[in-house]
Length: 404
Image 1: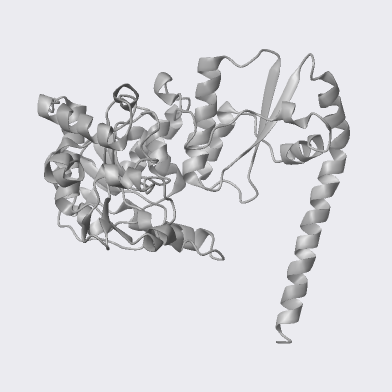
Image 2: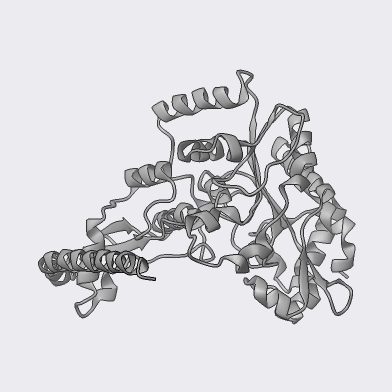
């Protein structure tokens, strides 16, 4: 016990030092804050923290902000300043690219805190949407682009990883527990486990893509499980080759991506890439945001009722207010077991999105009838549903028991 005291004392001392430095910074920024407040009737300076420590937020929220500015035309004589959150940037390449488009400095953290000590401080907050907020990205082109030098760097690295043969690239991502457990070891993240899926289920889809002429990259920064394949064009990039630069390059370079709803696929959205979203949960909230690309499809996890001994229909899920649950513990309390997409589901939607992107897959009258039935069961207006990723017709044909 005695050995713990010096460690605890050092931790308290370090924390005290950080707090003192913070308030010194705030005091130094107080005079500029007063000036900014005084001139605001004629020129407004606004500040915002960027949620930079989680990739989904880091990729999507500045992108949504820039889209809103482009579409809604923010008022003139306004300057917006930004700073990264206290945990820093989770991807160094993305941080560098945002700094090309936005004015970002750690100094603005202290300026923001100083302004918040003054009356009327809300005037100086940058309007912001989170990943589930109003999304206008479908109406804008990408705001970020790799430089010529970065393209050359990425192509060279891709050749090292995948070989000299030039093939179109598809990014595939499944969520598991490892990333958050390693990045934030002091917190219990198990309530997010309901979003996880088994990478082995993806292998038939990945091998089909490889046999169809693609290089397939299994994405992720830290992954719990590897997988087995004999196809050299299916590459476990996450386990063997991951780095921040290539994360961004591969999503910027890919033809489309097949992804669980988590951080990495937001890089695909950043570059307006077609997507098949798989294992979506919660049932509706992760897909009822506007598409960033018109070619987006999805398949949800199934909601199995332990009490009824069967999967719930869509209307039952909505009626029971289960569609918005975002905590695995609440599913358990309600007696719901989520069933992830099986290998055939994943293969079917992969073939669908590949056919859509290449123009070989045309939506049939039956496809549209099934999709309309899905949205009606979900209680979502047919006109509004046109803005969203569409449910996979193959999935709905196989699991028509959830529709009716």
